[in-house]
Length: 301
Image (tube, rainbow, N blue to C red; front, top):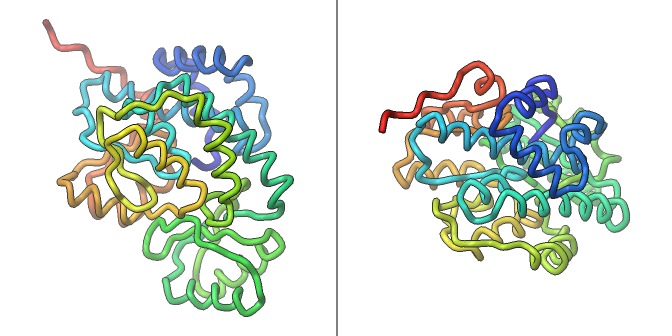
């Protein structure tokens, strides 16, 4: 999940019948109009924006199935996509995923304002591993806390650190020939966020009904395959404290014979990096695609 193109996503949520039905369901669960909340929200990771992302990904996956596309043999959902993966695999109902997403957004906002303020997660590309090692060593020498939150490709990462060091980090990345990209707030995927993980486990997850998935889920932290309700549940919890390792997910899918990857959501990252495109034939299923192409007719009985 990143900054979304509201013009495309918003139109999809209104025009596509699958998406519109899910928006209505989500609105009933939330107690407010999801579309209006998403439209009027100012923050990229607001509660409504996160639920809109979940809704968009779920609707696109169901739309793809309805077109007659081959059902997935495995499902992966990096970072914020994990909740949509839980839904489409059958491990969690959409309504429960909406409850989970909204509760997580509220807990994150409260936690990072009270317990660990001033931490951000910054993404950057074209930065070789050696250069990143040097940058991190310099942060160590300054006594600065930092952790890698996402391994996206061999030269593409996300690093969490204090906001006060963001300008320094950008300059240092450019000096190494890299490309600073986007700053994520709230931060995610760091070992020091254990108290947030524990709070969510104690206060949010007990009210949700996880079941064994009908389609295996590949965990975004390590590429392990989850086939039980508890496995998917633990994957979502571990996302608070463990980094995303997308190359491990790619390797796990390839090892299980996957050759085609269908990316259901407004993706500008995981489906486009070389580690993905070298391994699979990638088919984007995004809001613009769904608005352009009508569903395939159902086969005759």
